[in-house]
Image 1: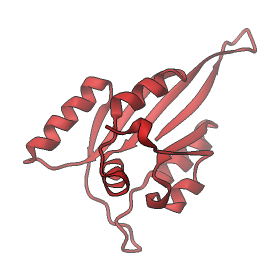
Image 2: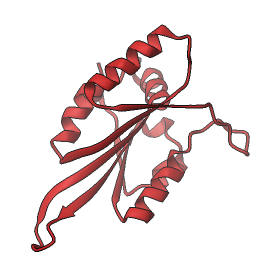
Image 3: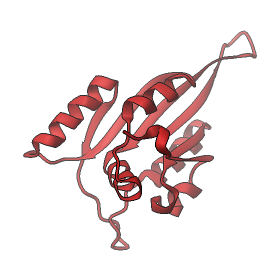
Image 4: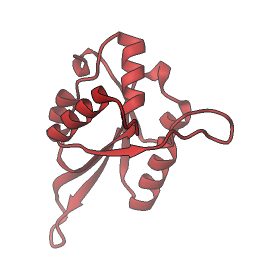
Length: 147
């Protein structure tokens, strides 16, 4: 998931650099690519592609806190090495009983508060329609982003 914002020089009206903020729902990406492709998401390739579009100013990867899972700790360390800030979050269950994430609300808030263009990368059949509806652009994850 990512958000983009053009940066304008105060004394010129030309585009200088696109600033990019990335927000990744780690569990969502893991399960959707596993279920759809039986493969893992290639975070390094994703980072390379996005960094060619502009300057990554923040990159947060949100994961469920699991204190005794060594594989999760190794994976989180790899994400940090790529450039992500790993943010651990508790499992959230919405009032409607679903266990969906809160990224649709985050994208709404980011887009409205900062007047930026928002993009989501995901597997269409496995991405909540509320999330797709909350952003400006949706990009289907394909083989290019898989290991």
